[in-house]
Image (cartoon, rainbow, N blue to C red; front, side):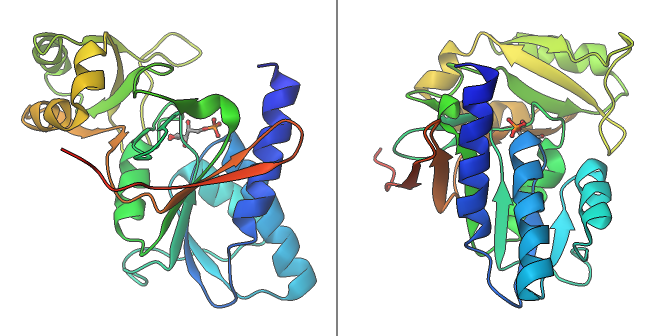
Length: 239
Ligand code: A5P
């Protein structure tokens, strides 16, 4: 899929997702290039319709961008329950709508915000759809700096192949929370049972969070290159 094709899909999906926002809502505001279009669309609705909303940003990047666009911000201390969280994703599994997130590095705050929301809507272009998690993206895992080598080895012992994420200057990428991120490939086990891998990873002391979002998505708003929108609702899990 070309960049231009993906951008058209992202823009179409973002417009559709932004139309779900209603006056008075407290929102979760996700991170990433698709969310940038949602923020643009929301700012336009605030300016043209006088929509009154406030949002909890999932990253410093989103907070800065929302502020620049005039979108009022809040936090989970003041608004512990959100009406609607909207966020992008990296892999979206057809059917159950399980996700891999975190290629943008905001996985931990994104999961905290998603958990605080009554409704969690994912917005993406069609290239993100997969039959099995891990077909498209590695799995981001946020880990504490202390003992990171030992944590990486323990993750490797699970059969994954974790690599330290690097910033543009080749030093380790550091999240908004001051942690490192490992991107794990070798996800055959993940495809069989992501819940088992999630539990095994969360059992490792140095692991703060993973990019696996295994439940809670209400719908995925998918934008295609020709501008048409596909809305996928989560099907009940079997087995
Ligand atoms: C951010 O940490 C990620 O979880 C993003 O939601 C994800 O990477 C999607 O980003 P794009 O919309 O830029 O593809």
